[in-house]
Length: 136
Image (cartoon, rainbow, N blue to C red):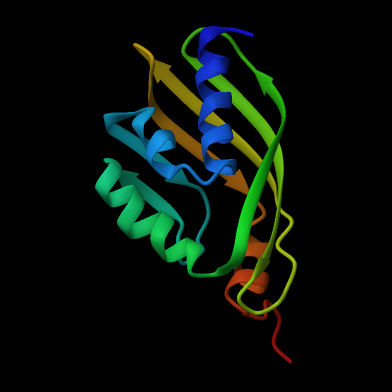
């Protein structure tokens, strides 16, 4: 496993252990987190304060209990690593939220400088926000 892959794996391990402080300590001061799609929490977040306050805190309000993301594979060398994974959770609507993910991490000088997250946005809308995607 490359050093970059180890840092990415550590990030997921800290998140899974509920240690957000240690996970966020792996972020560079000017980190950019790009959550793809058009969901209520999709967007480009710059810096830890914006990532936490405008993405992570609002998102966690939609999840009942833990959201565990399992890393299935890490691909890449150098500054870029792709993490493929799947998650398990339950939403505040009592629905299963079992999503599949692809994360693209950029790591420079031992710190995560960018994350692009790709996921099933329809599942976010329906399970986590209780929205119907079709008119009835």
